[in-house]
Image (cartoon, rainbow, N blue to C red; front, side):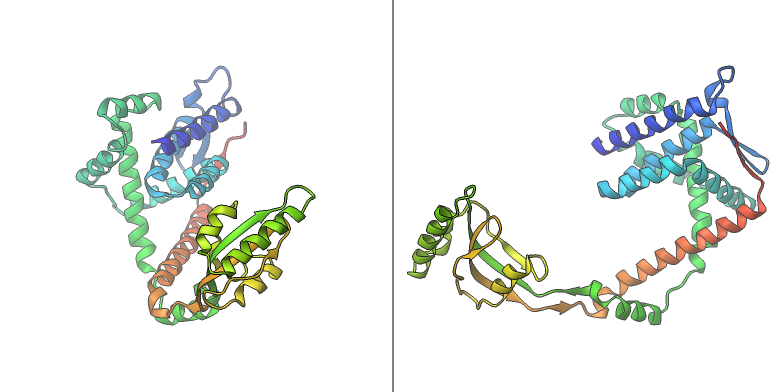
Length: 317
């Protein structure tokens, strides 16, 4: 719910930012015409409703905050263009007879409503957005019609061959390779200001106690100011420090190693050699990625073609 609130905040900022630009004082704000697509006009209310529906869709389909922010930024910067593309797709879909079954619309409506703690809260949120249940059902219907059209007219015609998957695997082999890794227990003693002698003395004491047979973790609990380094992949540390650590044998304890901010003493717990995932383990992942990439490219080609045939006018502020 917190994520949805942040989405709607961005939406509100965008809509109220657009209103002064597109609307004159004598014209009802939401009735202001902001674009014309063939014989279809697009008003500020249409844009607002499109953004609301788009943001609601983002809430249910995008997981990470980074993806969410990226998608929201795209809508903020290109909302009108996205709506024009959407209208072109919807118009083509309806011309070919695509429809949304009422049961499918109801099911999607139920999914959206389930994101809210109660029906009353859901209806209140709709009212604040200037929407009715009928408005939302129409938006859902249009989304489903668009989805069916894209799946049948574009996605169903895209294929990825085994040869393409294999070629991608070999061309991007490093993406499927894990570097050599080591698992370390560690003691870190920081320098105190400009005086390094105190840290060096503590490090010598800790090192002597470990090498005399005292339990490494017990000594670490007494001396170390940081958690254990744990698992480290080659390339993650400074070269000089990494060189010292990766040459240790299993269960070997290093001498004190000075770094820029303090002194490390480490114990090698385990090593894992560099490994590359077999093609069989990642072929589905590659295939899905290539399908997604081809779909986006083909959809953009289709939109570019439709835009050339269409009459499109975006009203200037």
